[in-house]
Image (cartoon, rainbow, N blue to C red):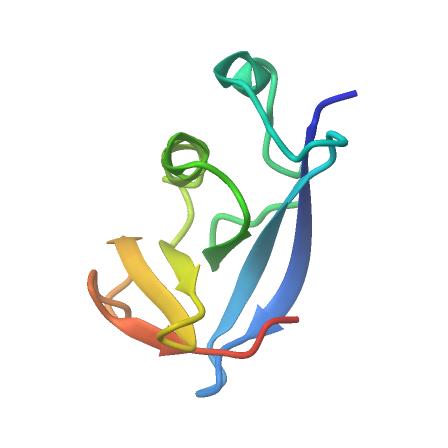
Length: 108
């Protein structure tokens, strides 16, 4: 069993933009993962490329980098920042969502 669990929720921003919320959960007893844990780590099968994805949860920067790369085929990708009360868009293929934009949201 992988020490990294990825849960996917349908959600929307405060402005009503539908997106998929990808929550990271580290399931090892000490909450520590190793780089080799990326091997075989896949996105949930029901992820939809027509919508954006917000990645949220505790994890090292290299895990976030891996997940942003894996989500490349979606409309846009954002990373949740609790200090900004929203997700910072880091990649976009959608006219209405720009890199650097903060999409206000509450966690599902």
